[in-house]
Image (cartoon, rainbow, N blue to C red; front, top):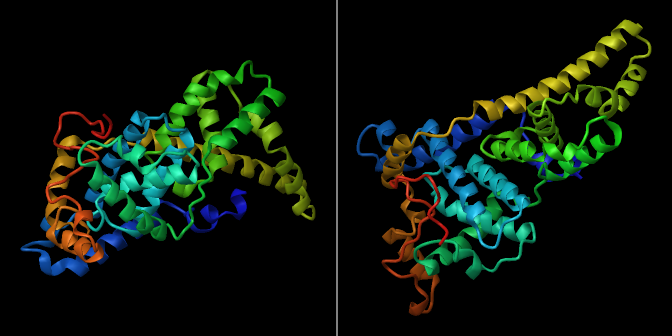
Length: 343
């Protein structure tokens, strides 16, 4: 149940300003730890919080593209869970410490396990171009890191189940004909929420109902009476009882305020989706080049520091990853925005 979940307790936040505070804190902490590496101005060498957000937005696009190209076909719940992991991880970390292309693949792999989408690591890396042995090493070596950074809270409540409940309820208690025709618009809206911070700010049922109301408006249907007369009728009935010592006019005002609050909440979610802007490719290319210089080399699989750390962990020289091996989630220097990860 969501009300008792770790998602509500530990991973749902008050507002966007709180999320921004976490991200700036991680950025500042990294710069303070690596300040001696900068040859000149800190802002010219390290990524700014705004640059990190642009970079992560681009990798969120790669994430959804990878999941859609994945073979065998990936369930929607796996995609939603992978997005939640990715967003949570970068509240506690900076892309300068852990490159998003490596964390992205690990988020999807762990999401497959948690959502019981049974794929082996060999099947998984078959969807990745490049050195698959190295890809395997990176995904598996980052798996425990990811789980630890999520505080071992792996259960994700996605909005898909609430949506099914709403559609069944609409069929039962509203006058709408064929509510299933809302599904394409609902799916499109939910896909769009993945690129926002909605999963960190709102409950799954709030996101789900916002998607249903959005789809209804696109189909020129009005579900306001369903929301006020059926969905929240219990709240309308209970609220006057809480203030029965107060005048009835105030009770009516409180009921109206509650309904207004609910609709404002859905408007906020729809506004998040509407205001989303995909990052500009040229800006992302420049940020990638900057990241290559300032990233933590201890966590860079192509660096000598990383390889030396692996050598200490391996006892059999044959088990070491290839010196010239490489794999890539995406090539931001290419002309396409698609993820170069499936064959």
